[in-house]
Length: 638
Image (spheres, rainbow, N blue to C red):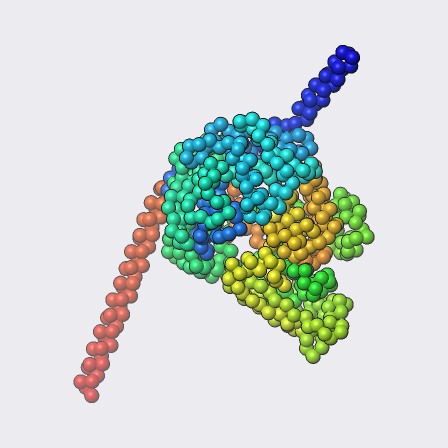
């Protein structure tokens, strides 16, 4: 018996040793492969490690705010209210995370759990340490009382367990989702002791206790927020923070609309803007400040996936449940005319949910992607294997006669015919009518030409614009026929795809399945994407998902831009290296010398302008005196 017991003990020890050997403890983690930056890295490659601290950055935001709690569905949260996370991602890798509040992460080979060690120096702004209890409380609170999104997003995180005073372990109910360790690493960590005597479910204008490099200095509800850099910020010397968070203060002013913000930029009331309107980029910045280089206007190429912006069908509506109908209506959108006449030719037509990346499907499926799709050959459209997806194109002249003819044929196949200039079903009992719901005034000029083409098909379409609050409520309740919306993308898509397209998300207001997609094949493709163990598998599964979504015509793709259109006053320093995802003011710094030169040149320009106006006024006065004198002489002679 002793021998048997001894053997059992040895086997147990070997098993434990093997289990320990199969875990990886590291300063960082990559979704696939190993992180780019090694354990002793000093800073990211794309920062200026000796960037000076100081100065102010003035920004503008559209709308208003009435709360500093961004983690609940109530209210409009203001800037500067977000919390730090256990880990933070780099900007020059597909998806890698490095320790922030956590100094290390430990995971088994199958990533069925994740364990984090909290830095001893991590503390809240009141001086209290960030603890394991804060981490556990944050997970439970966000899932129970936070925005419904958190309940959905952390659905496979079954629990967080305290292992020791500085170590917390997250246990997962799903051991196939390899993204979960990175997902919990990005969870905002909230101060338990601060919220003990407060109701987390309520909006608040009391600046919350946080732990980050900035805190709210002052504010006026709906008007402005000023953030100040925390001088004794605990994480200032961490490799992930070197060269970042360089401004002493950041002020965010809130404006009624984009037009006012543009004027505020040109007058110098704000320092930086990323322009999102092609017309404004082309016409609104023809000013001396831009011409002289005092106000920089830069088109900066980036290589970030641009995702999908589109007209989105609500397939919960009976009229949009036939893919042929959805495909037909796409022929009424004249992108080429829109781009030429409204966008000054600045945009590229979107052909993928993962555009501007290697994740986008192209040509016909091959290799591993083909192998994946062939498993569903009898359940997916045959066109996937025979015809590459291409959105309808036109000659840009504004009368897409051929496209509308194709649309009529498709509608006829689906049982819709023209009757007295009106599109009706085969029984002549139901009219084809629907509403396009908007909240952006700027989009009306884009949607109205599309609506006119739809009316040429006999479709009774209405364009309705509502305020932002009503829009949000209607979308949450799926109370719409068609909206203009979109889905962002990253170089490493994962768990969020369930929220975009899965059957379980179709009835959840917390998710972003706006189209109401319910397809078991899509569910399986998302699972394959999330479970991918290599970059090759991820790309193949993502392309397969992309191809199926496109072939089912859940949306009418619109356009994307492969550059950042930025404007900023020339008083900042920028790093020499721009990451693939584009630049960020978080990496910039205030350049005192440039600022002084800008002040001098602006003053000189103002004086010159004033002198010119004075000269114009004198000339006008002389002309006026001359005219009056001439009239007096003329009257005397008469």
